[in-house]
Image (cartoon, rainbow, N blue to C red; front, top):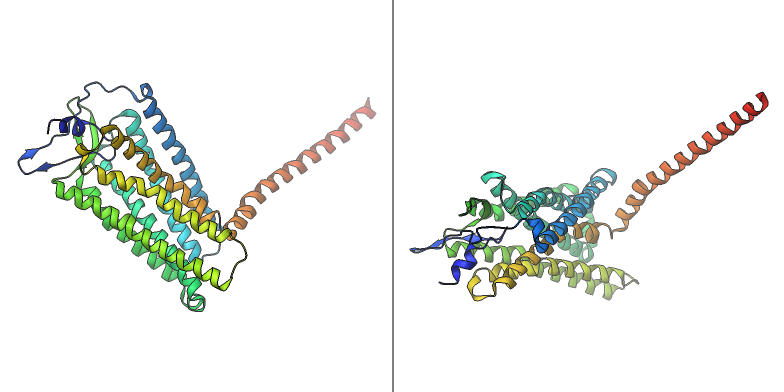
Length: 350
């Protein structure tokens, strides 16, 4: 495995691995004895900027969703879905600065616990978000197919129970991230947070589990649900507008675009020596960016397009801005009127 040393010695970042198989130990070391600073690399700076934008949009966007769906809107089944999805994406964004700092400093300085915890938190977000999107799709499908039954049996309590189950399931699928995540000390003394699989079989099992449970099965369910909804709406002519169909297409496309590249390159990483080094590393970076971008696309696609949310957003945010401007205008007019009366008094005294 001549060329294996170079590839395995490279620091992938969040998705690098090492493992010992049979009696052949593959050691992950840093073959680049001198690593330039992030500011000296255009790609590193670009990635840091992109992740910062994702962090800001996702953090404040999901915080707005949590505020409106959790405190400004009446508690319903739909707001329960939206609130849970926003909390999941918000938690992802909260831990994103750790990875940004790791990217910029080119070293993990937060210790073993945070290495395991942040990685697990990110995968909990991945699974919980996808499971919640599946729940939303199934709920919408049931509401369209069986409207009377849904009206009588859908409740906030049942929705909350489904959310709790989805989160527990997501935590269960994220356990391998905590088990196999480790801090490695390179030959240059730098610490890296990476996967440390004990065998290639473990690596393959984790990768295929994430692909099947975190993409293939959810995507199939979402496709089936929205296909049923579209056929039902067309057959019953429940809507004259094409907007619902466009929104559904965007939802499916966003899910597909954000997660497919990530899973493809994670599978290619199982046999890294059969693929071009720079294509694989670039693909892993782009896949991670797209997967991260899903955290701020969800509020836009699943919530901001909802009429109830938009109305509440306008009434709660825009009205406050308008009231603030009106109050400011009234204060200014009162000030000007007082000033003019005082000027009038002053002129009579003079």
